[in-house]
Length: 304
Image (cartoon, rainbow, N blue to C red):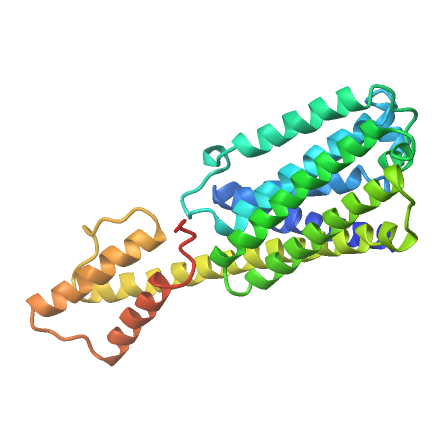
């Protein structure tokens, strides 16, 4: 079941990578979601469902360092995914606040190498096996799960600023990730200090990876919705420019970017209609109304 969920999520992420590559090249903000998909896909590849884990870990020395790489990549992909649906329209990958992921990556690495000086040979269940006899493994597992859960909480909170059609997927994904991480912390604690419970041990994979899958669907829907809005804006701009030309305006109207150009032209057309005492006819008013709906849509991405 876990392998199926991982591979389905991987396939969805690869679909985003391929389908949105052209848009990411043209639209700086779209690169946030695209990079989240790339890093998320690499993180899932390190799970060993397609490429044997010992092969990948062997490139890093064969002592389970791949687990740390996997954890850091998962964290960065989740953090980028949060911004993919909520960052301002002017956001760029380089303008995002990288302090939190950098801090988490440093904490993960420090705890990993200090708490786990002896890591043994490559293993998919490295932490789960090591925690039976190692308090250091328990410390690292708890720190990592707590860090991912914290990002899940941020995702759930930030989802209210995402598109309406995207919001439920981000929220469901965040809840699955947070509950999955919490169940793993309980499982690690029971295994290390008390008695392992099979039911608790079985909770993490379906909760976490179903959460990841919902999160990936959210990124897919966000990418599709953003592209649809951009196409709609371009079509409206063509109509408004045509309208402006018929009234002898538009060539000198400023505006950098689709929305800015739409707003400037919309104001210019209204002003021209008033100044020349030539009211807009029904068709022209319909275009202006459509532009107003587009410009006042629930997709500013602005932080409150």
